[in-house]
Length: 390
Ligand SMILES: *Cc1c(COP(=O)(O)O)cnc(C)c1O
Image (cartoon, rainbow, N blue to C red; front, side, top):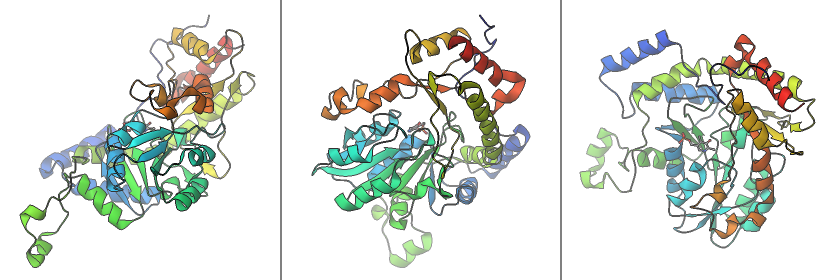
C-alpha cells in the first residue's frame, strides 16, 4: 500500500483572496459605517461581476438558495402548479419549488450531459405544468435550445440553477442568458465564492425589479423624489411578502477580491484536469465526461464515471480512497427523489428515472482545486487511483 496523505484531501478548497488587499477593504467597510442594505461595495461588486460575466442584468443575494426561492416567487406561478426538475442535483433545487407552494415533478436526465432530458420534460408536461427548473450540473449545459422550444410550445417559464456554471459559456455567450432567470451560488465550496452568496441573472427589467423588492422584505424601491412628487403613502411601500435576501458589504468586498484571482484558479484547475486525463484515461473502468466543443468548462467539479466490474465499483473506489485520506464526493447520490420528503411523489418512482439511477450510482467527484498542483499532490492521487484500479 502507498502512503496515505498526512492531512485530508477534500473534494475542493475554498478560494481565498489575498489577505492584505482583503483586510484593506474590510477597513474601508468598517470606516464607512455602512455594513449592508445595498451599500457602496455591493453596488460596485455587482457592476464588476456583470462586466466579468459579460451580462447586463444581475442582482446579488445572501446565498444561492434564497436567490432561487425569490426567482420562483417573482414569476408568480399558479399555486400548486407543477415545476418539472431533475432529481440529479443538490437538495436546494427541489426545496425551492416546495417552499413556493409548488409541486416538483422529477424528469429523467440525459445520459451524456447528465442534465434534464428534453424528451422526458415533454413527457412529464400536464395541464398543471407552469415551469421547468433545469440544472447545469457540473457546468454541463442543459439543452437550452430544446427547453426554450418547449417553453414556447407549452407557455412555460424557465429557471436555471447555474450554481455550478459560474463562467460557463455557449458559443462565447454566458449560459445565464438563457431562460427567464438563472441562479448562481457563491457558497464557499463553489469555484467563485463570497463565503455565502448568490445572484440572479435575468433579461426582463420588470422581473428584475421584483427580485430587487422581494430581496428586501417586499419594500418598494422608490426614490425620495418620487415619493414626494407622486404622493405615495408609507402604507403602500410594502405590497408583497418579501424576505431578507441581501448580500452584505463584507461579502461584497470578499467577492471583489476573489474575482481578481478566479481566472488564475481556473487555469490551475485546467492543468489539474489535464493531469487527471493523461493519468486516468487508460483505465478501462473509468470514463471521463467531456464538454462539447462549443462549451467553456466551468471548472467546478471533476466527475468521473466508474463502470462496476466484480468488486471494483464507485463505492469501492470511494472507500479505498478514504484509507488514503482522500475524501471524494458522490455528487449527487442519493438522488433528490430518494429523500424522505420526495420519495412518495409519483414522479420519484425508480422506473421513471432509470438514467438518473445509473449515473448517480457510478459517478464520483475527484478532488479538484488549483493547490493540488503543489507538492506533486495531484500525481500522488492519480498513482493511488491506479493502484486501487490496476
Ligand atoms: C450549491 C448549490 C445550491 C445552493 O446554493 P447556496 O448558495 O449554498 O444556497 C443550489 N443548487 C446546486 C446545484 C448547488 O450545487
